[in-house]
Image (tube, rainbow, N blue to C red; front, side, top):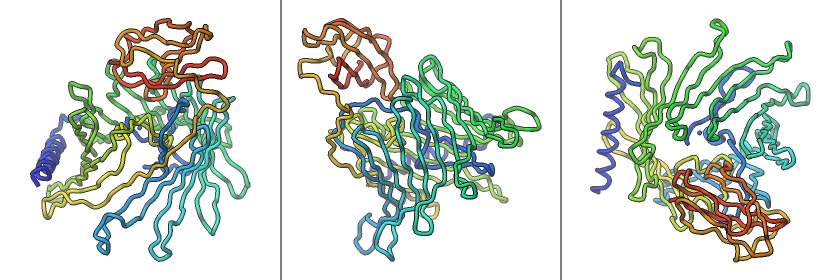
Length: 452
């Protein structure tokens, strides 16, 4: 009970912090969402399916995420098992996600009713992925949208072409493209969304997302702009501000919208706060949706919480996740079992639980190595953990091997051909977990490296 009151006090303090910044005239996707406008100019945003930023390196997984189910409280069973939303995932033998299905529970039919699905096709030769979205209607799957994603040699997204199905033409019509640029550290720098005009056969800039970092590493600001035809330029419409503590843990994520009426032209609309356990792993977050004041001047914000439960025997790298549920979302640091959903009731002045999200896994034996063979146990990287230098130890018959190191975002950090027991300097790397990939002919060795 004391623990519940503690969380409530923390939430109320967070509420007051937000309220204070709202009244001040000087107040100023890790989890960012991406948006694509359709032909009618309506903003297409999906809470579940955000942009696929990069392709994962291939390595071994112990389990794979099969589905996510959202439940509410069932008074008949006195348990949080009343199903109403499900996301299901399918993967191929190379650990690629090939299907995603979004369903709702029909109590009358006592079964899941499919609503939307996406199918993915991969072309390793050109480093491309094609995603096709279907909607269930008239007892069949109907084509809706298609995205062609192009990646560079480091498997990082550089362009995304968007299509809309035209039933009158019985064909796909190109509508938009997204161009992505990165800084020297491989972090997103600018995303530019263009609309394709059929009559003029030209691209026109529609939206732009700019990223700013602290020390070229930690995300600080994200600015969203839209094209203003009168001013003939992109004008800022909203922004996000990432605030960290001294240990570089994200503690608040604040969202603002452009407001000419305010002194600094920005109006705070949403704030998320994050709390961590004694090992610095995310365990809970609070979300405050700031409502505009009503006529009598009173303000009533919406406050909600998410509390996470983990199985710490599985690290995130042990789990095959959907492309759209990567470790960039802080909650996937270990195997996520469930998420408890709660909200603040202004009448009772209490935090009240309203839902639960369950994550369901199965054991996987996919190797992600195609026809390649695993190295023997004689192959190892040491020391591990390491601070300055690591060595790659291979059997004597392997004179040279390809050594690659990936960060947790799937970006290639090091790629070098080295000889047996040759040292690799990692002193410039940030502390954390990395994935190494060692290859010789048809043999590979994949594992984890911890940088202290």
